Image (cartoon, rainbow, N blue to C red; front, side, top):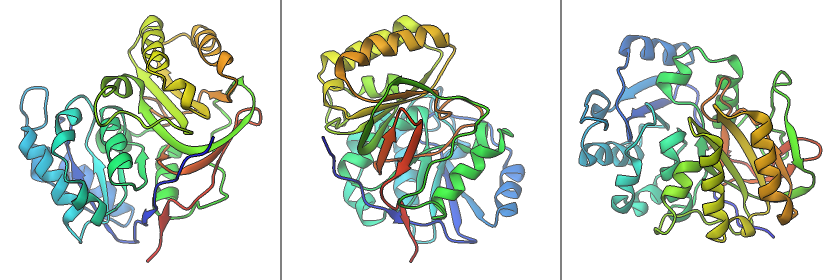
Length: 310
């Protein structure tokens, strides 16, 4: 099974400007620290106004969060878009997204957790690569291990292209659940969010993909329930392979048993333990990009460029 790849986005230019938006939950931002961090890496940070707002468990109203997202994509002075944090809120924006605007202004878009809903929607309806990667507050300003930053910028700046192996730190061994090789679009993200948008126009297009999943603070029976939901919806039977990221708070042995029970009947390659998600380090993955997963060799290889240099 194969799947069509998403198109590459313009590379983050040296001295390019990075937008910060808050499409989900609120967080207190140390503005001076954030600006210094970006300038130290050669970039200017433009903070959109919704970052400073708070509406209960949301970072501003739906209108404010949607306005900032659209404005960041539409502004030609913005080279990449980072999210402040996850939490909750992005599903409320999906049916108001201007996909024509996004499609006309592709650029690197970075986030994870609740941001998964935007990754799925953008890949399905705007058709360009997005990045499941660190957010500013908890990850980049949170002093996570160096691979977090290195993996992010190597992809955004085009230092890793077609044929490149996505590096994984040897300090965190990977586990082959089911051996084998598969190629397809890498797509997915937070498992709870993937399940939450099932039955909507924004549900995951699983045909021939390499499914990536991660989660946090979900006991093993809930992970079982979420995977069973995807199985009963027919999604797992469509995927070509599975990459399992960090599943924080779950016993590894119990998780491996569940993964074996779930995926062994499907006879597809499954690799577990990838350090991406609610973990340290938090490695960036290109959503929508065509990749080659070799679960036996514990390797993930890009089969396309994810950014292009103008």
